Image 1: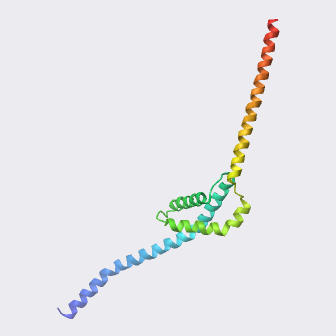
Image 2 (image 1 turned 90 degrees about the vertical axis):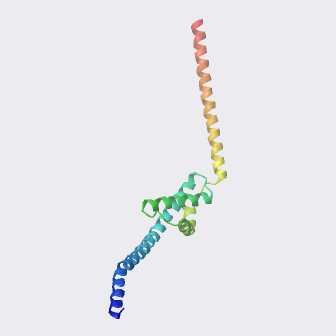
Image 3 (image 1 turned 180 degrees about the vertical axis):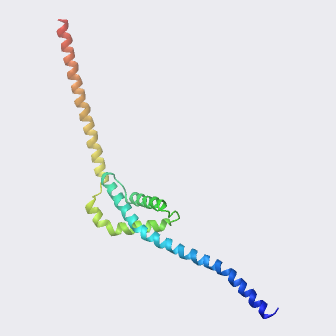
Length: 157
């Protein structure tokens, strides 16, 4: 083989490899852009999810882990809706924890959480209210019965 043939062969291989190498670089660049977009979208979504779960804790007793898993679920669903179906679960958990740590003082002040004792007290109050309503209804029914009995007695005489 002469050097001219070898040069042509190398040139042909290089020309054939350029689109393959270009496609690879485009894939890497687009992949990095998708990661950048994910990071830009993740923080606001995590913040909104943390606030939503904290608001839910005002009326429902939720433990910390339940709030965290709820927030992670909200963020995961939101990312899937935005087209980020392969987001790393640990990345989402870390973003939720970061936002919670940043917002904890403000959230506790704005949305005071219901405690387990408060839930029990609410249940007892509701049960007592229900019992009072039943007793009141029973008294009204007994009065109606007494009135009806008096009317029957009056008609019989």
